[in-house]
Image (cartoon, rainbow, N blue to C red; front, side, top):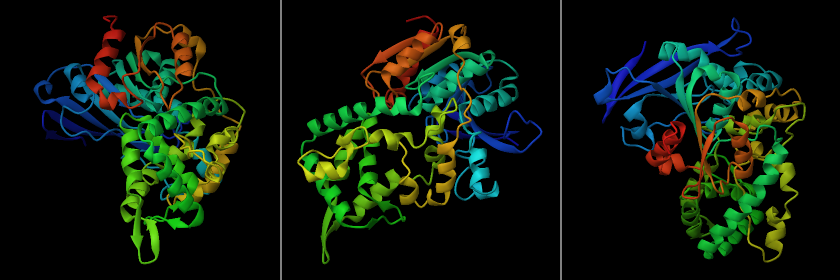
Amino acid sequence: MSVSYRQPGVVLTDRRFTVPLDHSAPDGRTIELYAREVVASDKEGQDLPWLVYLQGGPGFGANRFVGRDTAWLGRALTDYRVLLLDQRGTGASTPANRQTLPLVGGPAEQADHLTLFRADSIVRDCEAIRPRVTGGAPWTVLGQSFGGFCAVAYLSLAPEGLATALITGGLPSLDAHADDVYRAAYPRIARKVAAHYARYPQDVERARRIADHLLAHDVVLPNGYRLTVEAFQSLGAMLGSGDGSHRLHYLLEDAFVRTPAGTELSDAFQEQAQALLSYAGHPLYALVHEAIYGQDERPTNWSAERVRAEFPRFDAAKALAGDEPLMFTGESVHPWMFDCDPALRPLRETAELLAARTDWTPLYDPDRLAANEVPVAAAVYHDDMYVDTAHALTTARAIRGLRTWVTDEFEHDGVRVGGPRVLDRLLALARDEA
């Protein structure tokens, strides 16, 4: 039964749906999807078109907004009734994590299960619930980051379900292997790190000092996370967001405290670091992150870790042995994470099996995209750390009728920081009004 309630300026309704785990076996096992319907209070009784929001990730539930005027939501509610969908395995949808996956079986069964948590299954979930939400009418999809990957899969698999597709920082390469993705990523990350050190030159020595300490000490964070040098470097994922450089700076500036036993990493630093590093709230991100690039018989085989070896500047030990600045890393998943993070340790063998798989199926249909008739608009961020701009623009040219807004005003989280403006611009482009 749906439950409705109110926040300032909005009426919210909890919606739950039962869908097949495997849409090719509709009579088999099922899972539950959760979605939150949002409508402006003054339009509660109106017959409005629908917009379904697909969050970035993979592995994150939809935003938990409070009230109307948050990020892009207020602008969307001017025209739409919004559905904030927790994609399968995330948020309040049937979870997939270290606590629940043993219900499926051992690591082999878990790996098979998780192959059904990619963009193609998410699109089929949307199509399964759309008639129950809209009465059969097509809806608009807004896809952020990985949600944009899902939107491109939607245009490939079920364009009849879409009235419009809006994509923010999420145009995937249609044919790149994960190795290609990371070979393009590491130079972008290096540029972001260089820009951070240019802004905060004092952080060069601070980062080296922390890394030196981690090489000499076995540091276990309060939640049981083992903080290695590589884990510390991965905090550079923050550099892909609009305020990330500033947040990283504040994290580094008071990292140490004097104690009777000598200098140690402060409790405050450790508390912040574990919140940033833990995958307890979004384990699917670590488990299927490289699988979102699998489209043929080639395994992903821990691509980010292998490709990193091609860029020796990211080797912390070499940097510290000389006088080079420590290089942070970005949005990537590595096998050591499944040793460091207590939320991932029980899933190490499952992750290894996923990395070795050779039976990935295509997620995108180039021929169908080339004949696309759905209005599509995409925000492409000029030097996006998470999604390669060159890959994104190549895909934009491959989708018939897609209109791009290429901007350096925002980073990857532009829809959060400048939501109303970003959404307004995309709607104008999609409607051919810009």
